[in-house]
Length: 266
Image (tube, rainbow, N blue to C red; front, side):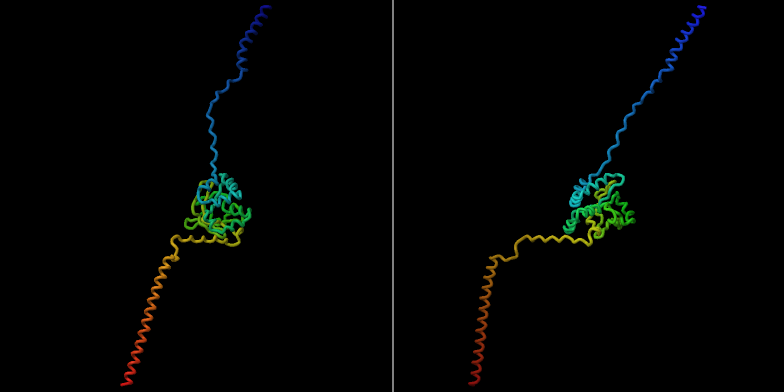
């Protein structure tokens, strides 16, 4: 009896010893998979924004227009639109000579809101290349940044693009910058909407002619004196000829009278 109990106990001990590694192996977590270290992708480059104020200050004679943009804080509105790379902006920039051709009171008499509207009237809130103007002309009138009713009409005449407002119809003189999302085109005239100008603004007065350089046309004192002397000599000569003529006439009369007396005595 005691021998059988001991055998059973020994068998149980052996079973526990042989099953312990299997249980330990079953309960342990699986080893983690090896992690592959891939390189971190570089961040996308920041979009390039065109600095409108800097561009207008160096690209051409646009100082008057730029001064008005900064005075009315419209340059900030245009810059924000230029930074919107999905839509962009198109700006028509009059040259300094275009402003100089008009009387100064044309712009000095505008209120601050009217000046702001005039500047916004010179832009479209979307990028347009020169090639797109041909199709855009079929959609006339085109609304400007100032909104309705401040519209412009575009005309494609044999490849030349004209921008028409009420009192001016300038041709695009040149493309200053035309890379999406910013397009800037130079004009030789200011765009003048009828909503701000009820009649054609007067032109600036023509500049006075410059005085001619060189000697004066007035005679010099020496020349006057010389002329006086010459005149005096001429007068003396004329008087002498007049006296001689009178003597000659008197002699002829005396000879004629003497001839008549001789005939009577004969």
